[in-house]
Image (cartoon, rainbow, N blue to C red; front, side, top):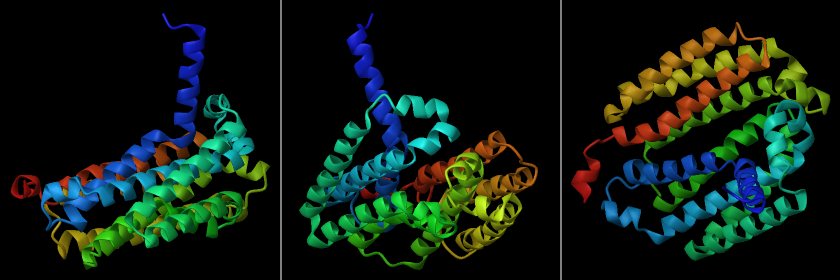
Length: 300
């Protein structure tokens, strides 16, 4: 049996893991490596990519920056989370605010140090990324449109770091990026619908708060229609291997999402929709291996 002290330490660990959303960071790390292996550096030997120390430093710098971003976001949203996420909020509060801020500064410092191993440009990139996350958490997320756009951009920036490292400017990569950007934009707007109660109480001027649920649903419908354009291009104009299975699945799920969206009225309904979009994004990450299923064997 664990002693009371050990239980307390374990709870603190899970609390911090909840604050930095370790599961999300793990998905980003996996996504960065899969993107590097199967898309950005597909013409390089597998070992050269996997054991590239510069790539590792960029991935770790991204992970540290994202973790710091979740901490500062949690810090500014602590009151709102008490309304929108009471159970998670109680777990998060097991770690004090001063401790969280200490971790925030340590993680950001580590991020810049790791970036400095790669290049000065990487240091500038991650310094601006850190500032952008702070500005979003402190000010921009409370603004309609600007908050959603900024959040989507900040989410895909870690992939931009890898993209610039490999300097691969093929059109298909931009089309993949547009689809991901649209999916993240939909997720952010759905999350705003889910959290409308807390946003309204604390004066966050999100799209659902300012323009209402109907306008938000119309915007989501438009985003779904627009998202079908990169899907069509990827299916019929670019070589995506067996990843076409994912895109057909994503179309079916988006149509189901659209049907449920216009029937949704409660927080639980929007939570289900939010999780549907997260599922599509996560499955999309692991579906990258389907682009060329023989690529690993051919490059060993």
